[in-house]
Amino acid sequence: MAVSHVDDLAHQRGRVAQLEADLDIAAKRDRLGELRERAAEPGLWDDTDHARRVTTELSRVEAELRRFESLVDRLDDLEVLEQLATEEGDDASVAEVTSGLSEVQAELDRLEVGTMLSGEHDSSDAIVSVHAGEGGVDAMDWTQMLQRMYLRWAEQRGYGAEVYDQSYGEEAGLKSSTFEIQGPDAYGWLSAEHGVHRLVRISPFDSQARRQTSFALVDVVPVLPEVDQDVDVPEEDIRVDVYRSSGPGGQSVNTTDSAVRITHLPTGIVVSCQNEKSQHQNKAVALRVLKVKLAELERRKREEELDELRGAVQNVGFGSQIRSYVMHPYQMVKDLRSEFETGNVQQVLDGDLDELLEAELRRRVREAAEQE
Image 1: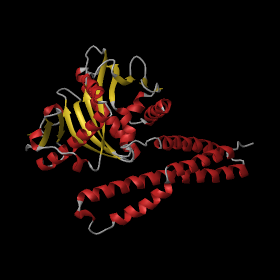
Image 2: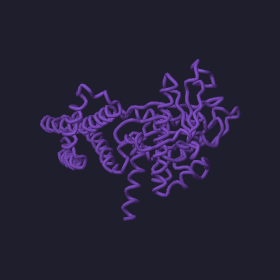
Image 3: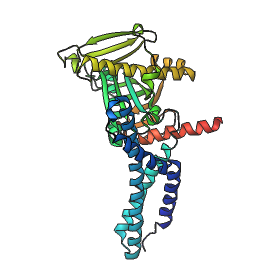
């Protein structure tokens, strides 16, 4: 006798209905119509800032609705397949329903966690900076591995990504990297990554194949649409340096001094951009990133977190990490805040971060509830 999934399907259908209310899908559909009308206006690009805000929000709302509607369609298909399996006693169809239910449940779990992202800036895009800490060339290699991990995560989610600056190590890897992740709730998800990440492995750079521990700092700030208007950066507060873009090993990848580095003198914040074709474009992007970082700095000051932030930046080494990635003598990734762990290190490094992110977000929600 074929196993019935009727009750399980009904339960998941109830979760979908609750999720539809929590996400206010009806309002999002109305908003989508408004945004499409605005995007079709002939003079939209007369104001590039306004056009960017409209098209960015449009892509976000489209992605959110597409993800929800895909889930609903999948559940509809499973209910039809369950009915056929019951009528015909088809074990293969029963197995397909079982597998499909697991996928639907996992996607529902992820979308439900997404409803926890109710912070002021959680819906924003994110600027991620990764800096090599203790560990020499291994730490620089680790920095490049982390950059790849986040870019792969973004790709798997259908998010956009743009690398603004990479400072290459003399032997291998990256001293630092700054890139933007663009997509629904990008900052809300990636805010869980802020902190020191520790890697333990057999060093590929050690001729004696000894075990090496390396550290890298990940900094995540939200991209605020209004930041250009709200943050004033006087010319006398910045130093602008221009240089030639460089690649691995310090080799020049540009014959002109088009790369730009801006130092904010009052805070010491340094941002660079070498991704654009002209010096003017690189300066504009670097200034935008600087304003985002200054806005976030002010926000953290208001929340009395600046001292902690500075401490984390100054101590990128043992005892300050939020997560450990162990590749030798065993395989494990463990988040030290949520206590979540997995043995599939390579899968995580290939961008499969959702379970780690979800565990930390759930921990934050529990902690907030306990403090109320």
